[in-house]
Image 1 (tube, rainbow, N blue to C red):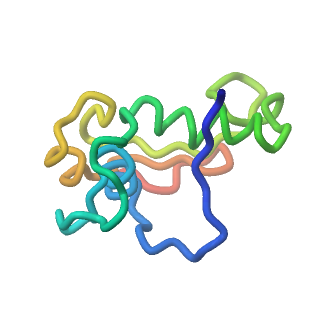
Image 2 (cartoon, rainbow, N blue to C red):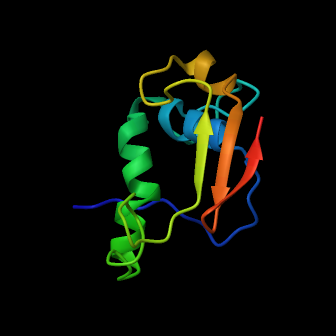
Image 3 (cartoon, rainbow, N blue to C red):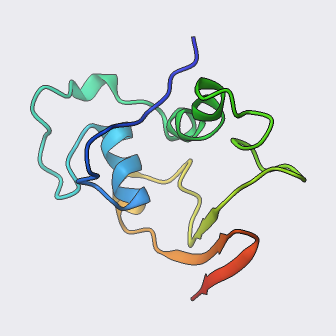
Length: 110
């Protein structure tokens, strides 16, 4: 069963690394335990990425247009200074954006 992650609430964790850290390690960005979040039920970072991207696109019947990086699809991209998929919890939280691309144009190149 494909799992998606989303909310209709204003984002209280607006950073991708902090969101990934919370979803994977079930802790708030400051490291405190999130009450009722069941730490043993965190998702591996690769599964969180799938839930945010391809599974979310499928959920909205938009997989032909978005959800994966392929020619002809829409995609906004953030590149980090480390591989978030196999980083430790602390390394995820310390990750910095080094490049963003939106609408096919570089919007940040730090």
